[in-house]
Image (cartoon, rainbow, N blue to C red; front, side, top):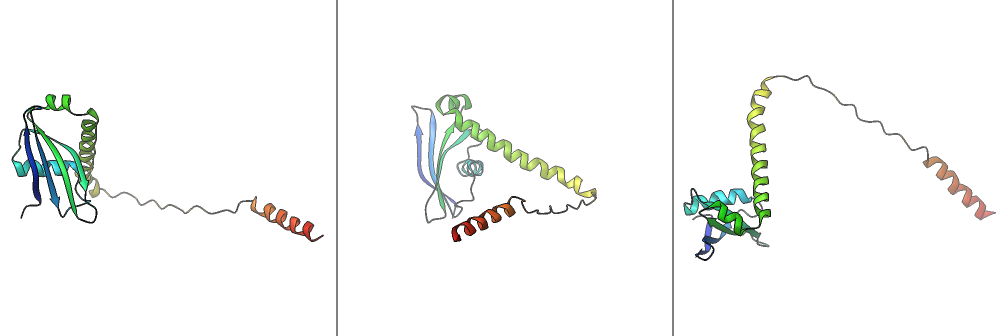
Length: 147
């Protein structure tokens, strides 16, 4: 059984796009938009096309996600139809994913070099000098009230 269940698959000829609504079963809270795009591209064989995740909603009490994706043949057409904020978010996510992958590759050669261990001393806690005069003031108020 596939993890992706197609709920709706419509060719919108007016906007020259394909609109796919599907459910991802069993991966609620773990699926990211870029991963979902890769899964949809593999499932529907959309190599060379622009797939844009429009919405992904978790279902309360169930480990499934319902996602809506638009598939365009041309990226320029997609940029004219869709809000530019969505593209900025996708670019940001791609940059973060590349950033996470790049240090992982660079860390392997760095691990062979041994760096000297630097010990950090814990900061000593000092009592505030203001706390003692406050206690004296409290005592003096009590003394005045007794008199």
